Image 1 (cartoon, rainbow over the protein chains, first blue to last red):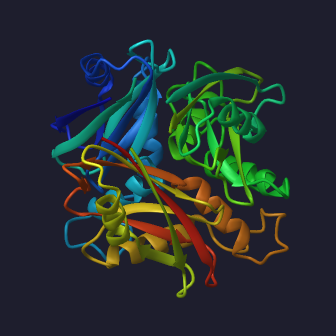
Image 2 (image 1 turned 135 degrees about the vertical axis):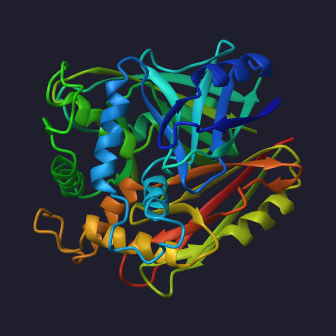
Length: 139
Length: 139
Length: 139
């Protein structure tokens, strides 16, 4: 059994994390799969997926701070600079994180850990319209 | 066909890698799937998955050394510090590595490369009890 | 329905990226799956997968430059040095990137974003023969 949903995410705050967890939970319920997998895919090379703590928002603030230092915008090492100082850094951040993710579906629900949330991570400075495909498959 | 197993890993040495390969191989045999996928998921945000060399243990020692330098504990950049100096660094290490992984199942066995092992990577300094779900699906 | 293909990639330029996108597209067509997933797996610990921009080759040149600085060969931190200065750095690069990847199959085709390509990333300095398994599953 396969259920497919396409999510559109408007990253209206620009760079940062956008919680997808509730939308993924609903997709699993809509899919009516009892046991299987929920596979999530980002159709972009300057945004990616993050699984991280869903409680203290400082965790995601600290992740942003760490990545801003590790992968700075406008790094003189880059030659692909025509689309702005945040473009190549966005590609590097995407390469260091996840484009796809599989979460188990157990007893008809998205089987995340207690403290896990799934986030779209926008790596460009300005808002974008992002596409995520959710595939629920199983019995 | 779907076979599900939940593994419990006691990370009794604290931070470091714990070999899951044999338990994954057994889960695939138990699942009686001939061709398909073995999907592995960690239910935590301060532990993750590592696929790396199964021969020389120095490789994993060097990986620990590299990550200790790249993502140091107690980094002054962090604000989420209430749970100790190793908590936020554990979240960053998780974001930089894998929460889920798919390995092919071929001819009824887990189809890893000759030198590949699959490890749980504990990122907290102290021992924890970790949950990993293994989903084997296919024909 | 499950379709399986094993790709062999000769990384004859040594370290760098090798475009797999066309071969993956053909595997999906050969698999005759309409809706489902294409799961890609690298059977090595010193080569990995990269999803990144398929247009300007400078993007991949810049990714190589970034990783050469972040994970230098011959780092004095390493003890696993018997196989050369590029061996342990290759393991670290693999740990920081992807060993497996799932791409949706939609309407019988590999459903990548407009600017996405899928690349094998060779992390060793010299050419190798690499094995990638492609599993297409769905209805």
